[in-house]
Length: 389
Ligand SMILES: [Zn+2]
Image 1 (cartoon, rainbow, N blue to C red):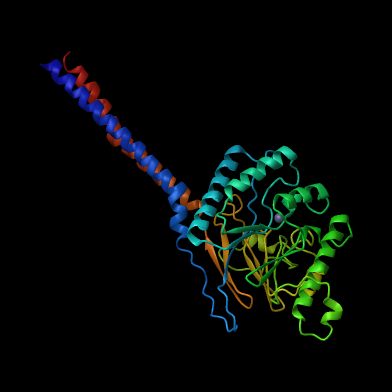
Image 2 (tube, protein in one colour):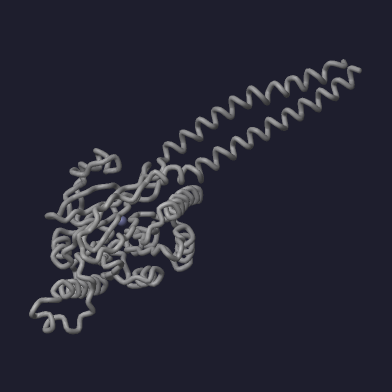
């Protein structure tokens, strides 16, 4: 009789043990699913397009829904550790795909430094990085993705080459100094790395293109001017709307000392003065751009931190990095834009601290449960086996 009881007890306890193991595995699966998938939707669903006053235009059009993000810095094969790469790329892909699905933007702009090692990578590494980028930032056909070039994509001025610029522009169907017009809104996309002003081959071409864009914009504004036919006869006209300037380097500012907000630079970083043509554009290039393009809004990246500065009465928004490698609290800008007006808001992604905190709490709970539910079963198993002796 004792032997039979022991057999039943052993079977029961091992069934209980199996059930508890499955419960633990289920708990681990739920935590991973929450942190790596659901959390992005739960956080981004709280973001809303900013309010835009209805326009007084006689022919109002629906505003363009634009998302602006920057500095994704996909890691390359030289300095990128495989786990760092895997983790950051998964985070960015989930955040981007959740945002595209929930917010349904018309257009997305990435303001440079898409890649970390575009400045060094050989053809094979470049193709590999590009394929991963295209997979991570895939989008439905009704959403357009446009990019501007950054110093990590083609190198700083001293390491930038025609080959690196060409392969970037070919991959993204882009030309420096390009105007993109959507719903009557003009976006000017500038290669700010080439605004060194030293007449290098790439710099000269970029400046010529900016001059051409400036001419087209001016002609588009002076349609009713008496000199219009004389000056603008052969010019391909644009919508007569004041443009929005998009580039990687910010226009010249002394430092980030005046920047505010939870995702602005740290107090230590704010004390550091910016280096012209390295951290920001030179004063000369900044003045030239403002004069030639006469934008109503500027958006730039590169600093990885948020800032809002005024150049005269023109606001410039520094868009923080979209990668958790550069920030604990990445974000992107959401803009409702018409030909006359715009309204901007910011959408924060989940913070990395939240994810680490959830994993730590789950880990402690799991250890606690293991001690409570799994250990006693082992003890009772051995105890039951000892009984017949
Ligand atoms: Zn940069």
